Picture 1 (cartoon, rainbow, N blue to C red):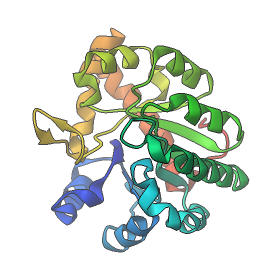
Picture 2: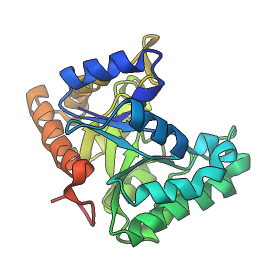
Picture 3: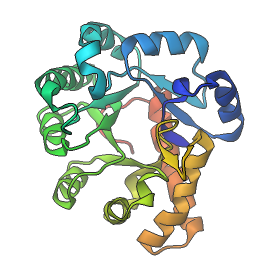
Picture 4: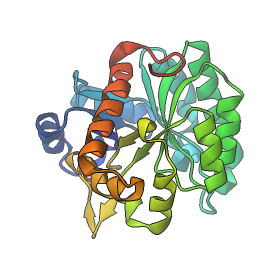
Length: 252
């Protein structure tokens, strides 16, 4: 299973798509803009084992903000939303107000519609992301992708009911392992973040996401078999929501 993959952005996307359908039990294909979602949906259709969601990545907020209304319309017919969120790093902070406007509009629309599952980018902006989520009860289920913020913000996210998608690249770093160790095992799912995320210089593939079980077993101090079973159980729970099972409130 892979719960955060930019499958449409691999150079050989059709081939990766076909192989992922064979090798993965489930893939959540997140897109970076509403127009990308529309184009991808035509070329790489959703299946019972692959969900495609509309998003507007904070890194392209300045170039794609004109597509916000399109995104808000797409959300009406999609159980999942992503990639969305905020990026407070120096490279993108000049557009932070615009990012916040977009993210707040998205979360508010999700709450109005009864809840959605959101794959959320929160680099250097977890506090503001959580502020927005907490201000809009009923938005659905937040899955914080590749969380890199402080332990205190992680505790707040856990208390707020957030889920976390964790990939092999995140667990290559000491900070990533430290944060993963403090995540609730019943709210963690695997991700690749391919083709952007790399390990030893090679882009991660959707079927590489399962490798997180090895290092999660180490940081959680439990057998790898137990971790793999937990990740699959968690994944099936989210997959049901992403394929139309309803995302209001929290998963059962």
